[in-house]
Length: 458
Image 1 (tube, rainbow, N blue to C red):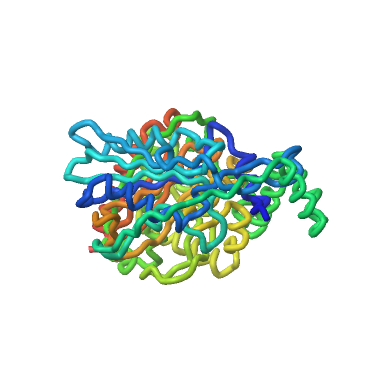
Image 2 (cartoon, rainbow, N blue to C red; image 1 turned 60 degrees about the vertical axis):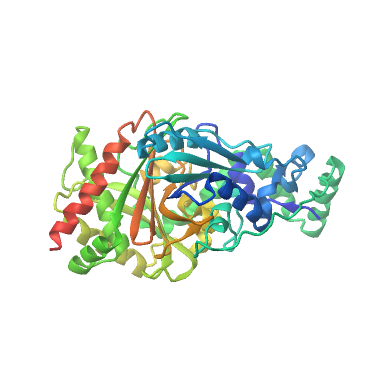
């Protein structure tokens, strides 16, 4: 029995373009483990059986009679997917991010399992980094895990299991794939038209995704009007530029306590203020009513990180024309509260259909959801994923930084991902190298905006 990709999983592959790859990126910076990169590589190999999909590739059905299937890769080579790299001295963060930018610009090889991980040494301060790239089609369902998750332990002394011997199953022949497709049709005849239209016509798949997006439009009245004009929306190239910022979680909670709202409201206020200053630095005209519309998938969890794998999403107009940060926060708090109370959010099931939600790909929600509608509906994606507020370890090395890299949709020059971990919120900014070439300026403005909000709370 073959395992077939679902309709939307397949659409992630068919709708992907070379200039806008869908893979979700992550950057872990950690103290150098006692055994160095060898220990990290051994840990990846030992934990690989926990993510069996990571040794499977996508196989097309002859004649496109049905969606592709997952098959074991008989030529799986861990050394292809797990690569080593080193930074030249002095090994600054900027050098690391230059490497990350180049890695994120390259699409994954469709002929192999759809993931890569890079072990990077040479960071100043005796640190190393793990850079991951994972395709959303690889992770299916709310309970799925990815390689980044299975690497992390709550103790530096967690045992490393011995690598288990793996024997790939024989890939099905073309005739077997065709037969399995007809068997699926016999059991579920309604699939015939659906599957054929999905695999033979990407535009038909886009229409179905657009139907889910239409539901988003109906549930969020702000989406009825086109998204405001913004320099964030322009034709983009294949190259990326990644920048990062940090904020102390206690500082954000202090702002929330002083002015109301939630930590997420404060984070959106930070983003709005930074975008305001960035637009002014570019000479963009701003008036009191100027806004930038963000698609904001939010994990439904308590502030202490408790909760389940649920997510809701809002289309939020960030008031970049408002010069007063406290007024910006009040407006966003009111808007977010109103969306939740009036049912103007998109529920978890809709987001799963819209953009392939899974724990490892939460930051990708909405990034590719309405690729044909993105310029009309929203200007950028802003994700916020609460993480554990305790230290984690990989091969004995303590994880210090966790930066997300959210993929770009066609016509969108910037995405912002946020992850809270061990008392810090980490911002990952992924930008088109040409249209948003000054993304480092925006990252600096984020940290300045946090400092300014803290001053208003004392």
